[in-house]
Length: 259
Length: 312
Image (cartoon, rainbow over all chains, first blue to last red; front, side):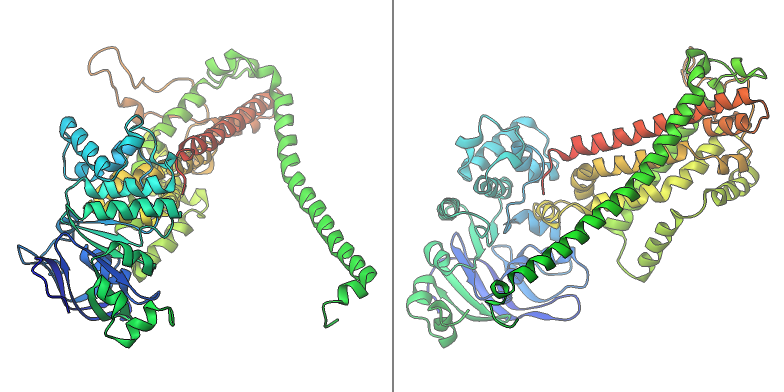
């Protein structure tokens, strides 16, 4: 396993997850997210990587009957994100998310980015203006949209829309950002832009990314976790996972013998 | 027939078969067109007939005169004002209640057998004959709540009548909003009410409005429930004006006033033996159809305008 002095930002401890109806989608997952590093989750479809990602911001709470069992601890405050007494809304204010398909609101570019601030009751125009500009710069979109902030977000290209969604997730200064297959709906150029952006974001925050694309995991991540049928098969330094995996299953998957 | 060359081997046969099948296409398109035309032409004929019969009464006086014993002087004034005021009450009662109920059912209510039962009942309510609503209103609004045979009673009755239409329209409009948009809002930390207010209600506005207008167009033509609650058929006065020239400039006495509405006035004229009155009835019928078409047209136009900027 990894030996490093990098601080841990969050860690899941013996996490099990049951969907409505009792299907056990995650089985005893224990792994860390290192601070200001990118951790990638890889594995075949249905292995539970998206399910795991969506535990971090309690998205499963939106649908009745889902059940968590285990802990996700956030540092430095040692909050268990999954505890009953912890409000999922508070969690989502600390951990933001970027989805598989760009999902901007049918509002202006400006209002899309400002929405997280609006939800917090921030209506001071100066403050919102500054935050929107900062977030758009952080998402490498500012130069392209600065003259049309009040245009409808749908008028942007797919890659620009996804960067807008990153800006929206960035505007509220989250500690962790979750990416759920963020480039699977994009062309190769837009994908390269997003990957470059993720590498830059690493300076500010901790990233967990689900990807169906192993080359992407190898390119962008510092740590990689391979999941299969709801279990964490192997976790480690990305270079090590892709060059010297210790488990036979991991090797079969990354060499394409399976999956 | 079992190998790939079979089409080439039996080319003539295959072509004959395709021609036969295409003939069925042709036959069906003719049947469909005839079915469509029967519906459309009947309606068109009816409308043209009404316009031809009522044509001499299409004058400004027809709208500005009270009903009269003399057909040529009888007008729609009290009826169209009555219709307008009743519609105001209907709108103000049905829309907030229907939208709130629809939003609750779709966004807040737990999904279990009880909410399924409510859903089935709401859908069925839309199919209850309107005269049954009239009986209900007579018992509830007139006798129990003692609201009288008034504009308020009429408006509430028609409000109840279109309530299921508004609820169903709201639910359908709300359901059309993709999960991805809701999740995007939740993911930045929005509460359920913020998601409903900023997104769900906002994006479903066009659909809800369309349902409301179509419901109102239906209410405009309703006669039976209003006769049941005791609408008058001959009124030579107007309700007190809702707007006054002294503060507070609003007056609610009109709510308890007696009233008539356009379809009832039409029914009244139609039931007279004197044919001169039938002309008035025809003109009223044409007017109701025109207003209904305008309302539905507005609904379609609004839906188009509002949907234009939303693609998903």
